[in-house]
Length: 505
Image (cartoon, rainbow, N blue to C red; front, side, top):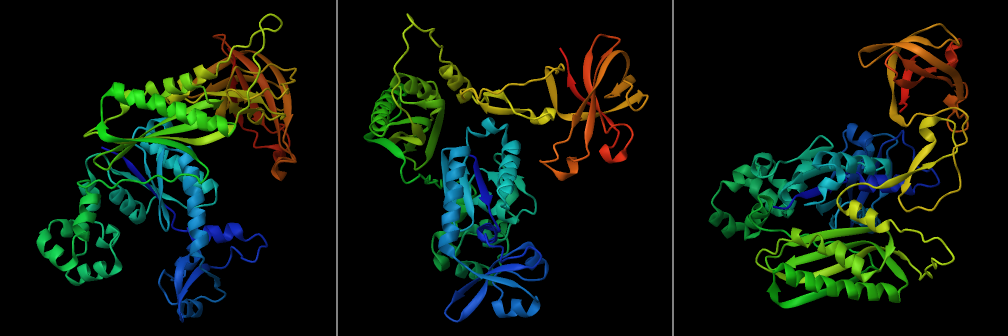
């Protein structure tokens, strides 16, 4: 059973307009609305939070809104620009999450994440990560996951929270109380259903189909079946304009693993030939499996660096062919180079004159395609410990920079310093004892202080900030890296609280 994620962007038009306001004509202090027009009629098509708090809503006449809110900022709607922005976001999501991503116009994105959620740490972490990444782009997002496109679409648009997870097989429990307007029906159908007394999807689904079909046609039954997962609703994945894609359609459906492997190998050869003609190497490729029951399955393979080695790319896909469920048969296979980068031929060094360099990229590819994140730690020119390292690609080139420190550093640095209780004589004496996570430790040896100043050019609040670091050893021989926030005298330099920041081997 597929798992479908719906990303609802309620303020897409508002966020796009604010991001495009390079000259600063719009102010965040005043409410902002987007106005659509048809002939002489003008109404609100989108409103920001301040406008909604003032009582404005979508569909309200623009003249009435202007009379209610003094100083209302009004911008003409631009549906073409909104769709273009949604397309860019959908293409970005395609490169980040799953091979099956499509626009759910005018304000949403839909993704089939079956088999891809484990790469993000599970469904809950994946959804919260999506919300946070959109928020980092300045966009408001509500995300829902369910067994069908219709259910995820409805839940994302009705939930007051950022994320909704409908457990497998429990779609009916989540959607039966939702209003009929969330069935993605034409507005005249919704008005007609409400006139007949239908308010919720549960009431509608419990009604005999024949009278509804006689009055409204088959559309209501189709939407209900799609929402409850009784009728498949395939997602036609979006593709970049210049994407390299090869495919093979079959007169008779295939399903045997050896047959699938044979045609996948042929598609890899065709893809590598097309990449070579363009001087490119693939970084991320998707194998799309089109089945006769109008469903779609996808397998994604990535490489640490651009590649077009036929044998290696074939192995990456053949290792995962067992995950393909042919069902009633496969009618088409497509192989798409979602991300491709320039790749030039390089003369291999001779082991007679140069030491041969072992390429670890294949090992990284194997580990990465199993769902593990592979990266390397690189130094950064910063005295602040948590800013002195960054994650880079496992095959990234050396930057030539290194840490130039005269003081020892712990092998494990906590991502966030832990607050501890310390008994120490201020301002320069090391601690006598430390209590960390409920356990009190007597300090046997100590070295310090090492003073580290704040980076005032990064944030103004760090102009006076300092930390005094100590290396301490307890009676059991364990060594810790702790610091006091502040110089121990002036309150402007820090809170004078103590923190544990690292652990030595």
